[in-house]
Image (cartoon, rainbow, N blue to C red; front, side):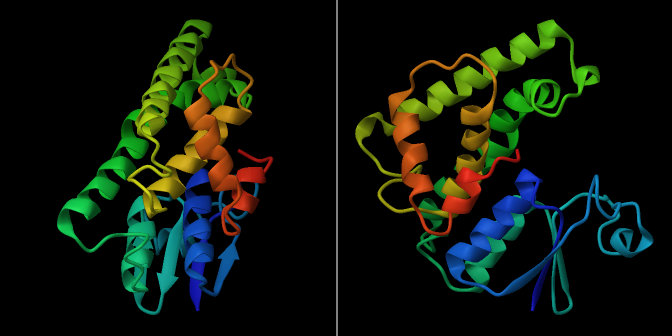
Length: 207
């Protein structure tokens, strides 16, 4: 059975859990990380010297990096709806996932750590304000993508890109910050919350 190592409070672990639920996989999830078993434990380090969650163990395979794991699961279990086979369509999904892992995540990191994780050491008030500004710009870009009437990031079909971007957007809607009225992004968020596999992750109170 698939083993997922990492606590549910981690957004990157939730990416993998949501992907498994979309596919309908059986798995076990083990709590590792701050507040649980430390990732400095030799048993964890033997699997992932980076000491980061999630880690997926499946037979002899050990996989790390959440976006990579999500793509692996969709490919491994033959879900071209979640990860297209066509090279151009697949590249579009992967480009959206890369954007989430770089620009989107980088934008909200400081504000999130200070305001939602209560880490005042993570940034000055000026840095928090700059983070909120850039975070808002990223969501504005996202909002604009839906102006053409598409339902999901890459068109009419839900893909793994929607999992990773949806979870980042969840943080936006839960953050104690001023939010412009991005109607397209809000409607997209609501669509994700209606999915049976995504409902638990969109409704989660942990961030």
